[in-house]
Image (cartoon, rainbow, N blue to C red; front, side, top):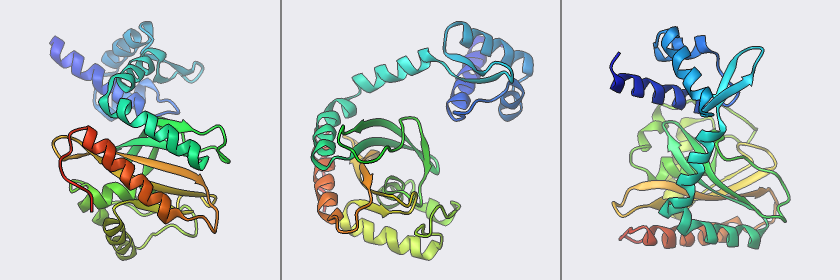
Length: 252
């Protein structure tokens, strides 16, 4: 095997490990990636020796991402323009409303939380960085379905499982919901993914006028809370961040 192919297989194994937080076995990796077990064994051995992977369960020999992978990821967060620009705004917003703010990125028909700030006054614990969630029942996912042209067609193909009695599981109703979100300029969900949560999200664009992330705010559902006003504030904040990233158009 040439060095280039080995490097690619190593990257593939790391990505696969990152997508399985509860751990996977050597056999599962081999079968999923169509890489011989001997090759996977050598890759995992090297990754473990350098702390890029570790045993989540030594008895079952299930592997997960190691501390060194996390450290490199945190370096990216610290040096990325998006995170440097957005962080102070998100901290201020979360503390103002006593909630939790996030930055998220899409991966196919899911998204991943890549930054989180939880106000010390937050009334409820929310998701963690690295967690993956579906698109159809979350404010963040709906932001991608509404504002990212590359995600719009997913409305016709993604599964729509119900998580609470408020989850939209009808495709036509979801399309109507997405249309409303487009008009608002920010997305929302109230008790659709968890019955005690209400969330808002807005798209972030870069200098190429491409949607690259979302910012969002989550907190305990409160019946009389003015989420529309908070959504408009989040939308305005997303515009400020996008402009500082070089985005030249203006939100509606």
